[in-house]
Image (tube, rainbow over all chains, first blue to last red):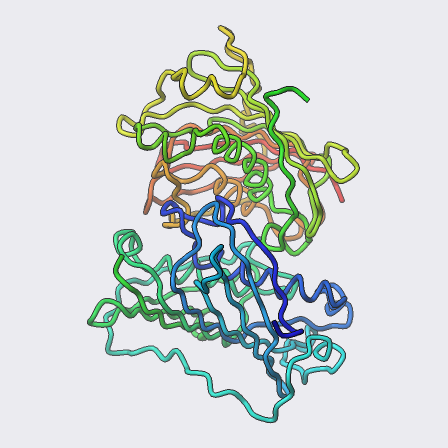
Length: 247
Length: 247
């Protein structure tokens, strides 16, 4: 194992799962990100420390690949590795192994540093990045864009008011809450008969306490690809593309 | 420790807390109930087993007393004990100790057995109750009712659509989601400057997938007692009374 890989065990709790006993997608991402949180704590680079200096880590994209979802009571091991970084972007990998050591979930994520006062992306500061021992590169990764196919069928439009508990230490909606909004655009019957295989989600604009968001959910003709758009007012906040398998 | 006390350790995860780094009230109740879930598994009385026989445990009331809320990263120990039962009701205690062994949270809860087909309360079956070694009593506990003071000031009305992830294995909204709806009736400034000391919540009618609920939040003149009502259509589903302290 490389010296920059961090891992920890986790047992799936009942409130991390839905009535199918499998983790919800939002909780799956929370569980994966336990490792980056705990690695940061181990390195002394806590969220509080960043916040005190006026910065916070923000996610701009996740690409999730799911072999199978962990189930209630299952013992898993979660891994993370800060892969590489350039002036503005950090690329990080996460994965989950089951008890047999089989990789069941992978996630590739892009992090940026936000200046909390200016609400803008800041240049990465060496003190916040070097301890993770990732590789510096001048290249910007060419990550696929989860472009929405506008010819697909609009299947639902919903709206939500941002709640107090949706907000994180960056004073905006935590990246994980978008998963709940997006998945909620699909109906019960679809969710009970399909399982998520891949999801590419891209964050464009932060959303704050008390704002209203509205979601649009579209489905491709083959009924195994869905597109999700979250808007705050007229502005696009986040969009995603999901690939599903039949159960 | 009595032989019917079950306990387990837990470390508070970042997604169990809000931006104040303290557990949310809903997550606190989830965390407490880890013990009753795990005790049931240890005794071979899993949810699946009950469901197969057409039954499920349903909460009718929680009374929560909070000395202080556990914080992100804290190591706690959670305890539970099935206290007593009569024909229809089970009374169960939960509590949390911090690392020094100080009790920081207590909860007293009332459980009933639901016939999942008839959607009605069933008489308790000995096979589901005896393994917990609680005491049989002919008495029905006189638990205070969290009656809403209608002379208090209405401070907010909000509505929510029930989502797929709100539903549990009883095919209705899980008792914990009501906490999020109720707490969301209070504004950011109140939540950042107050801390919950006591909450008495009573469940009257189940709510199903796709239903709309609306909440009414009231505040007493002293601004330290709040009242919460959740209705589905015209019917009362759940109500609660909270006592707050200033931070």
